[in-house]
Length: 107
Image (cartoon, rainbow, N blue to C red; front, side):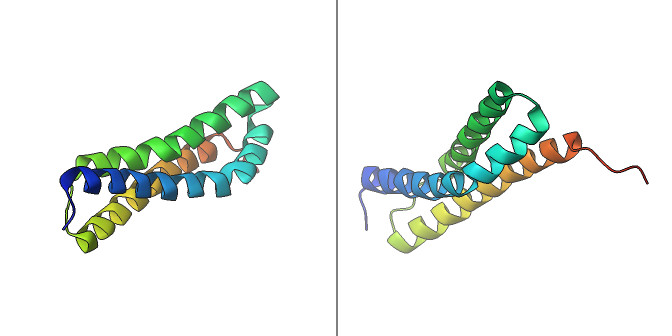
């Protein structure tokens, strides 16, 4: 059994680690894609940074909505579920934005 403050700090640390890992893995491909879509380096850099921040903030928000579990197994399971759902929602939002602005071949 963890103290509530220790559980909360562990929850945020685990969420930050997972979301930062996702952001680091996707940074380069996202930067290349946005450079193609945005047209200028400044716009591309802004949207790459913005997307990366959203990939970290969204999971933190999802984890913050949950109650903090003090049982280690429930803490890890709840944190992973919320963090991964937050990453998925951030990626889905970015995917919709990119898809709606991608050029399409005329059929």
